[in-house]
Amino acid sequence: MSDFRIDQISNQAGTAGPDIAGITTFSSTSGMLMPSGVTEYRGGRGRGLFGGGQNPANSNVIQYITISSTGNSLDFGDLTIARDKLGSCASSVRGIFGGGEPTTVRLDYVSISSPGNAFIFGDLTQARRFICGTSNSTRGIFAGGYNPGLSPLTRVSTIDVFTIASLGNAIKFGDLVQETNESAACSSPTRSLIGGGAVPGVTNVISYITISTLGNAIDFGDRTIGVARLSACSNSIRGIFGGGTGGGSEQNVIDYVTIASIGDAIDFGDLTSARSRLGACSSSTRGVFFGGLNPGGTNIIDYITITSTGNAIDFGDLLSATFAGAACSDAHGGLGD
Image: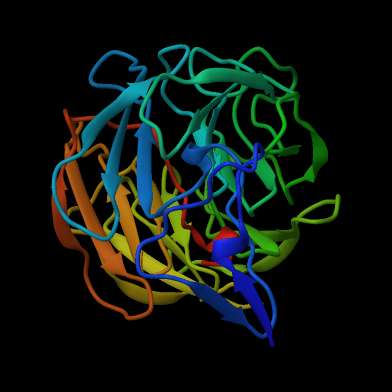
């Protein structure tokens, strides 16, 4: 054991020492790591963001909630451009919003702990909307989408990847099992799952990638229903899929999978209302679903407890009725939470 002598520390000039009330020595069997970096990169986590969407025109508004509480969302700032049908992902520090309509390659970023307007991060490899995003602590993933200017296909199989901590353009990771748009994605620290979507009919297929590598997606299993325009969130163990459009109507179905295994989804419960084009984010304990469409936009925020099963519960309201936005958080399953 070693002694960390507070009374022997002085400033650079040697004229004064620290004032630390109530402490004279610090004893440790190992060591102590002092915090570093700017203050906005430290502190508590558990903030969820919801950005963009229609209400009814395309919106640039970013809203936020504290996932562990309940209540209405608050204004965070603005995206660099107004858009809907975008995707998002996050590390514990940065939230990234990508793609969307007007059909764009634009990637924006914000510091999640500090409300304010977004900055340009870089570009996707292809302009597209109806794109889904997910991440672990280092890599951001955007997959699928739709670009009406492409020929002969307008749906996209491309999976893009980038390093969240550094600004720059995405590179190609690989391809989905088929050209798909209006899917949803979630992650553990090692795997990303992409489920549902339009191909052009709706699909119940879930595929997966290993985030640390490059390569094409692999079949994981099937959801309990086939839908497009759905949402997804996760902790490090469970992936949750909810809502969407299938069978000619909006759905309230929530189902789940164990991310580390391979297999079909199991019924979890129901959203508070059936809706599509909603956003979702999570902490280690809660999944939160934002807004949506049925038949018009809604301001609903509801939540589930990920480790259990059961129906969603009312959380609060968005600033306005909004659909086709994207959500992310600084405490989701891809971060090991």
